[in-house]
Length: 495
Ligand SMILES: Cc1cc2nc3c(=O)[nH]c(=O)nc-3n(C[C@H](O)[C@H](O)[C@H](O)COP(=O)(O)OP(=O)(O)OC[C@H]3O[C@@H](n4cnc5c(N)ncnc54)[C@H](O)[C@@H]3O)c2cc1C
Image 1: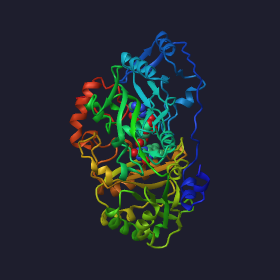
Image 2: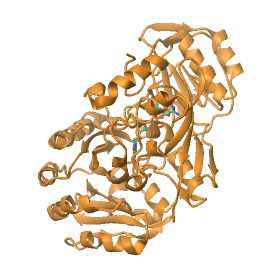
Image 3: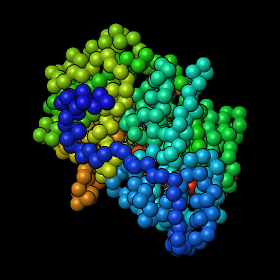
Image 4: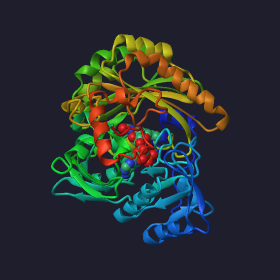
């Protein structure tokens, strides 16, 4: 990457040193199946059950991909998810390689009422894509992206990462909204909404989903779009993994010059008031091309910073003009904004959020960036290199869709504040979580609702967070998954 380049900047050096780089890659297991005895497992309701050897063998023989059991050399690599705090041991891992593999694994779980976790990219903060003693349906071998250049669309498999989608699209001068860390999976990311640096121009990722192929709890393979199974199509755009396993998504792409004015502007935290007060007044006037949002963090040497993350998706000269008033505030430590490949920004946070980090996050939707919020941001700042707040700037095209148009309800937000802590030592787990909760609690009064894809422990009601969409979601869940097979997620109980 550009990672070397990125590491030169003050902010990158700070963040990269603050969070441990524990390696992003996993070994790819060979196709292998081994089940010598019946194994103990757990049902959807938490009751202990036995899985017969013959049935596991039958599943393994029928699938193209491997079924991995504890003791297999690839089992430990496959069960690992992004957040190192979730060290779980599934009874078996079905490493799917086709629609048919997914269907067989879903049937296997449903017929036995076996606890089921679905792994896309494995980035679930609360570790919902792995479970103890259940079946982990793993899509890590399903990462193909087919771009239709003429139609400006892409079919992307449900286990692909955002880097696969970005790379395949950008190779043809095309793009769609994708998130800020390239090793995040398209699966969970898209199903929950999909915030990214292009959302002010193109909307959330769900606003760019034209259709999907999904395997529902009954084992049926369904094509969903605005014309086909419209209720299910509506539900999977914001309702998370509640409705089935998405084998592939169909995305709308947009032409883009990948050389964009982008980078970080960094000031010492002592100037946070000047920067944030200006931002509060200025941000409602932003063009849809400009994505710019504040970050507060602490360097390893204890220096606090206030930074702005910038991507201008348009003519760089116009971007320079629009950005000029922000650049004129105070005295920066670093001005890294220049015309550079969009992928530089899309990968710059990869290292500091590497797989294996122990992490906790909370978030809140902000309807207005008020002066009162600025005051609290300054007062609540935690000078610890393990803690940071990021913002996802929304507004613009995100607001072109009404609250009920898709299952994702928070269309009025101008911004999402993400509270993030990361550490390496398990002994710091409680401290790390508490720090995140403390920062969030100090700003919570400025937020309304939260983004399911990031919220950690569901201490708030899923029902009220979906607002007017909850009843419809619960009905659709009842129609397609009455037994709540897909419950390892921000769970919507079937009506
Ligand atoms: C470092 C980091 C950066 C992030 N940045 C952003 C960002 O910029 N914007 C943003 O919007 N969000 C962001 N997120 C949140 C992210 O969208 C969620 O964590 C999302 O769930 C990740 O998807 P995944 O497939 O990697 O997750 P997984 O852990 O694999 O799955 C998460 C949930 O989705 C379900 N799921 C996954 N794939 C499928 C599928 N194919 N079919 C059915 N269900 C599936 C799983 O069952 C599980 O319930 C970030 C998260 C992390 C950890």
